[in-house]
Image (cartoon, rainbow, N blue to C red; front, side):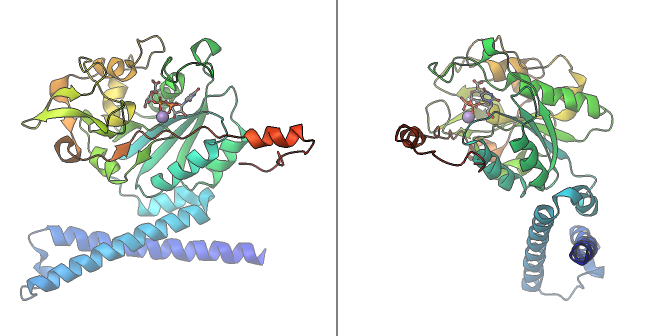
Length: 344
Ligand code: UGA
Ligand code: MN
């Protein structure tokens, strides 16, 4: 009881400190942007002094982010309260939709992904399990992760599943799961008030957190290169005079939008305005992305990000399947193998 109380007291004090900190920093940064900054920084402050004050401010902001991450991880059930204090109402939310399915490496993938997302302000994770029920592993993982999240599930029917002998690209993956995420957004947000972007982040890719700031102010659809994609070092939109004019890919560069799922984000209002825009299990191989984007935009409207598509900020990494051959060998030798009660 006492421990519980002192924990709550610590949370309370931390949250108050965070609030005061944010207020001071917000005021300082707003004042710093305005022409009448003399009231905060008098005329006679030498330039190098301003530089060092800026550095100090940056340091404090980064400490503030660290404190927020620590609080989120320590009090995952209080994330809404923590968010209310640090929340800047005008900053667009990034809605990340992630399909995921049960396999030996799932928890490792989700752990890595959640640690990336913890470093991104105003992120709402919509995690959709490819499963007829919500699994205990994912439910428990989410309840401890410290992120703002929505947990959904829908099973891919067996006809649309790749068999273990099939090549991985034979059938599209994560289709119904991403569509359920879109359906949730369409049900819970309103076109006149929604402020954010949607990003489809697979659970096995690698994301630089700068990517999320690139996409945050997307007006319609933003695009950028994806590293290690399409059996090339990277695949990328080709940008001429600030506009996307074609695609650098080996596979079907003639597709209207020859990008990987990880290579674009969409303003959420555009998706609310176009309820017919969904992913389709029946499209030709490699046409999932181009099919969706064709329903909502044109090449001329695309917003190239990541320094005019010259920087790679996301990688299409693929995790090796877990090789558990020695579990079987144990059993063949009459040993019980690893303890199934230990979650991996
Ligand atoms: C590539 C693209 O990067 C994917 O976005 C696209 O969905 C996929 O091709 C496709 O053609 O459908 P790839 O690495 O081959 O990705 O696919 P996976 O990473 O195996 O799967 C994509 C996402 O779907 C992952 O988040 C994964 O967890 C999920 N998934 C996969 C399921 O939900 N169910 C499955 O049975 C398999
Ligand atoms: Mn993948």
